[in-house]
Length: 260
Image (tube, rainbow, N blue to C red; front, side):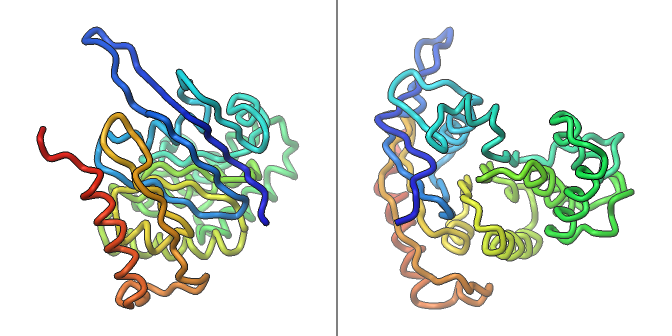
């Protein structure tokens, strides 16, 4: 059995605001095994990104526990156990692509030769070899996001935490990047936790899909996605794919309130 690398037990998070407490997460219990690709899906405001940020030590829970590689989220962050990919590429416009990828390596104090090797290998991994000297504004949105993935991979993390990285892209570019991400995952065997609003994206990419209900965010259902490792885009037209997509949609509907 693969080792559990992320474990949340009875996790709660409440934000205190001027208008009173906001219950963002409630009683979240979830184990993620090494090498899994787990997508978090749910309506806006259900706590998908908040849960990802708790795992990444960007938010502190108010109840329950979280461990990442057997450590607290803070210890895992300091150990660079994960790479984080944001909704926007978050590249520095005054730095070239290679220098953007180099930034965390400079912070780590790695020598020039090691930095050069990691930059080259990870840009090649995301099909950006040859664009090292370009600036972010010279690349398309999809290429910028691939550069941000290369930057996250450069620190050699055990896992990737991805917060709707393709949400702002058009459908054709998104399909292409979904294919590239799936190939990247198959090649690196890294654990991936992926936030999305898209049912087809979640089904296409994932080994499991966590369906969340509106605030306070709870886990409504966890759906296995047994489509095998070889997933061309055409798999989305198969009965197996459509059956899983229907399960996810029904889970979202069952957990959603339309009263507001």
